[in-house]
Image (tube, rainbow, N blue to C red; front, side, top):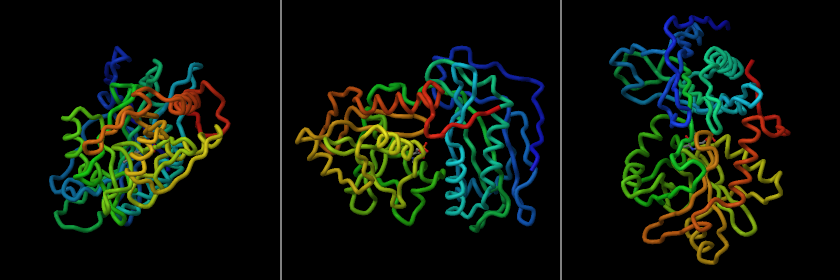
Amino acid sequence: MEIKITLTDSPRQKPADQSKLGFGNYYTDHMFLMNYDEGQGWHDARIVPYGPISLDPAAMCLHYGQEVFEGLKAYRCADGKIQLFRPDKNMARLNVSNERLCIPQIDEAFAVEAVKTLVNVDKEWIPTEEGTSLYIRPFIFAVDPHVGVHPAHHLIFCIILSPVGAYYPEGLAPVKIYVEQNYVRAVKGGMGFTKTAGNYAASLKAQDEADKLGYTQVLWLDGVERKYIEEVGTMNVFFAFENEIVTPALQGSILSGITRMSSIEMLRDMGYTVNERRLSIDEVYEAYNNGTLKEVFGTGTAAVISPVGQLKWGDNIMTINNGEIGEISQKLYDNLTGIQWGKIEDKFGWTVEVK
Ligand SMILES: *Cc1c(COP(=O)(O)O)cnc(C)c1O
């Protein structure tokens, strides 16, 4: 399918101070759109000036949340080259989400092409300062003007771009995490393994309460026993014990993060033993008391690697690695971002150049 490009005739001012980008505050000059209509399939792939989308007030996404999304980044290397990190994995996961939410499958290779074409059109928006990148948000939503519950027959696939700095104001500094005991995010059989708006809607209340107590994110426990560790807000989570690094196994209620899968591979390559298994909060607390819990860190595209300096579980406060960045988190961060920004050789073949 051809992508029709209509360039804006009024380009906007780019953010002047790259050290103050924050996350999700600015959008570029263009966006990608494509429509799905039953009988016709996906059609009319186009890049147009960034701007509001007009929707019927009865559009189904507004009522029943039939929406899926992805998140990846474009990185500007020192030599000017532009790279994506494993974009094929994002589009494969988008189709996993689509399947669960009764959204028609997309052509994954074409969706990667769409990302590349859009990034290329707005490449001047990719920030250049250390640690900055262009966040890419593909998303699909149902637009049938119908207040009745059924899978949509009409949808829009959109991609927008946002120049970003660090996700957390803390940067690579350790964050404080609140172990959530009251609310749950997802259960097996639900939508926890998909990237969909509803999972986030379900998480806002807990996030807000944790925020008011001075915590950056919540750590979710499983929705049935409230015992096994799941993930952290927008990140998967890893626990480094004396003899193994553990991350919760994918069992349907947590997201299969691309940073997670890359970290597992990279840590193993660095010589660590990494196990994907069930891990209870009691086991973590016991290891903490025995002095065998060395490091905790989150992984995700937005935050990359985020060391955890403190975990609050009920009345128990666990201060991890003296609240400092640990050796494993630091090495993983350096190696992963080294590949993403083209500073070290990509021996895994994870990066894709945008030209
Ligand atoms: C996106 C996301 C992650 C991280 O996935 P990456 O592919 O590494 O960016 C983790 N958990 C949730 C709930 C997410 O939405």
